[in-house]
Image (tube, rainbow, N blue to C red):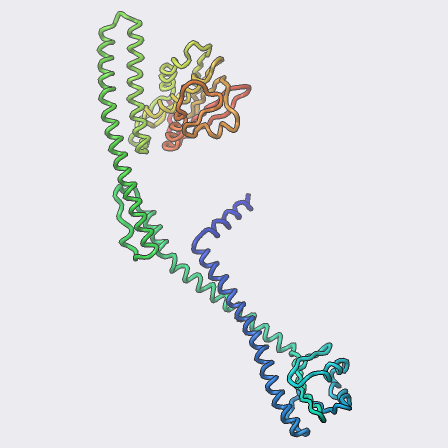
Length: 446
């Protein structure tokens, strides 16, 4: 678990634009420092060899002109030979480096000019001037001093670290400056709130990339605002237009009930019409709440007894059972109240109980009310485990579903539960059937 959290934080760190800029600057600065160090070392070696070669050629000319020339330092030494006696006296020139004597054939064969040659432990630059009578050699020991080499590498490493730190500091400073407009834009967007007409963002920024982004967001916000206004007006129109015919149906039903007091069969049918009209009105209200994402809290809303609503839902949805041999059991262990519109509770419980009635061909449907929750169990065919993950997806219907249906009922339940912070869960029962559980919040004992 700890490793997963650390991995997530690392990924989040890498995704942040500012740190990507810092990392890019740091890598660039580090590579540039390393390239500079390598270039400095290469130039040092090249210039050192060039200067040594130039000095050797100058000293060789002086030595040829005056064999008694003593302008050499401790690293310089010279040797004069003759073509017919090229080996004479050369051994004494390498008393400090006896292994060099094994390179004498190579030295004797060198042409005029400056050459590089090395022994087992030393390296040299040698200037050669051969004539028909005299062969002149001037040597310079170029073996690096270990202490000097160590000091040079220390200096270069220190410079590399210092330049890398400077690159890091510059990267942090420049990234903050670069990201400042983007951060400001994000903060402004975060503080816009729910205002239907938010203040435009583009006037606060220059006509650069961030300004173009702010302008694009303003245009997008304008389109969303127009869509929200149109949706709000449509909801209001639908609410008004649906309420009117429903009110007419309800009034006409009440008049018919008053005129059919002795006809029990007609009264039963009229009662069903009356309840259907009431539920349609409440469904309209619930869907309007859902469309506007309006939630009624405990300070302004009313509390409703859930067990009474369950009884109404059972009575209204009983027609889904038809002639099936299905028993319905309602067990109220602990009545409780829920603070939410009655229409919302009716829609949520109506979908859960209605599905149980609809998809149970034989057996029983048991509804349990207790401890702030309602549990609906059925003995239907149920669903496979992989299908349980998709039951709340819009338009999804299980493989065992039969008859007509849009697959929207549970999707609507999910949206209401998200709006009111309720918890809904559907799971398999053994040996068959499903168990739907919805837990409410803001409840009170009934």
